[in-house]
Length: 272
Image 1: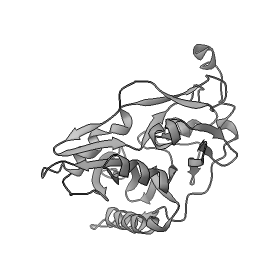
Image 2 (image 1 turned 30 degrees about the horizontal axis):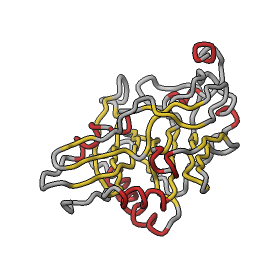
Image 3 (image 1 turned 90 degrees about the vertical axis):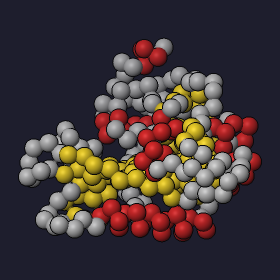
């Protein structure tokens, strides 16, 4: 069945999920063509700090985000992944080490039943729970990767920034359903909404530079109460692992050189 589905050109569920406009808080910046001082990374991280503070009064928290934040003399992408963190001692890992551990990449969620439409109930491809030990930190993801069975021939950018799903343990009894809607992918358990995923395009054209990611973005929002309940029940702190990736050409032509800057926002140093 799965092999047959891989020959189909589109996912009938994802096909009806249209790209949206990026959220108003998404930290889009412009980079000057020629400047000795690049202020974009500091401005983007400043906007993230502000978003972190503001979301305390919101029903939703950002579970993950990925997308273009700046074009111009240098090009920047921002990636944010929500993780649950526990501090067991004084040895705190560097932000780059937290990012490179990538617990959100260690496990993939598949949907049941297998069908021509991205919908169903998540089943984990591996039985063990994903947790990473770094120094005196224990880290668990709050989102996990998924891959629709269809070839995204008509929505090719979703092969670069495709759907992510909430950690099943966030839902009641560890089970939620996945529904493709006109503007989002929704996740619901028997008590209501668990979260939703959306993506957007921003000036994307058919002509793309092979060295760069597409000018798109995506977010996965999670119900705040579920995140808080899971964190409290397991003695964890919810935080963000963040990376800004820059792409710059040496003389305005040729291959883009990539560099990255890392931060962890919202982590706790309280030893449990």
